[in-house]
Length: 385
Image 1 (cartoon, rainbow, N blue to C red):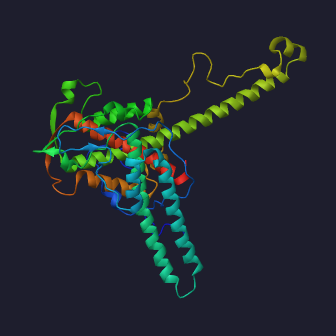
Image 2: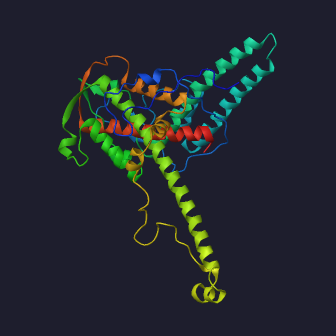
Image 3: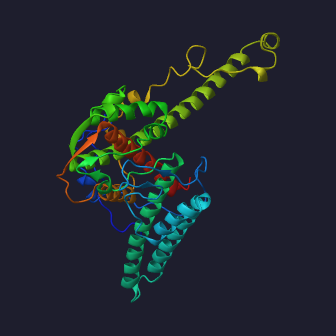
């Protein structure tokens, strides 16, 4: 029996991919049933690479909008999530080990419940143990979502970027202002080729030019709260897609280089075998000293065989596009929806907010980074990377 007790149909790929997302995209599809399997959570303790930074405190413009290191919009609802929140605040240096241990324990608890269900199969207690296994599955899924959220929190903290707290704490007299902007830190998360697509996305969805002036950044605009929430959710999905597509691109690059190197080495050896022994020694010396140059990697041609990420993505067929855009787990879909609801609230969604383009840019950049980190965390939880 599979560990996932509720199987649903996966959503169709968002219409805004691979081009910049459209702000009118609805977020309701994340609440619909899907075929996404639950994440496998059993793996040995490991940790993320990168510097271990202390907890950070970032100030906001108004005192009611507190950008403290652990003041994210979504509060953990499970014991493992609350435990990791305390570890991140008080014992940051062991946070990654604690997270791995919690995930391992959750997987063991769930597997034990499923094993008892199979052992009791055919007995009078079959229904009881099946129900216990189902409840354990739901409990573990909620806990895994909290652990994933804290891992994302940890990733943001590595760049000294606090998550924007609940907007209700940052809106005063229908005016939203998010300080500090942290644009540089949020952009440094991405590779150069991904960053270009992120900047185009920001420009498309908020109407701000890439090379805009300081005056343009601080110009004010009005936006409906509901529209802003959809824009944030769509940007998370776009960041997730970019991470998936760029990882696929890098993998194909590596495989192409390996293939070219092997092909070139084989051609070089075949050429040497055709030469008389005397000419081999005279021209090349020992055959082992011959250095092969991968195809397309000669002088003046470094990297010319590879398309930029944009061209690579635009060449996707519908099946590949759907594969890169699809959320791979129920936990990821639930986490996006819970975070978005916690950030924007479920009341006064028709409220019109006055804000600056700088604050809009901050929200969109954070959302794209959130999606990118979410993809990384899924890989970490699923494969124990």
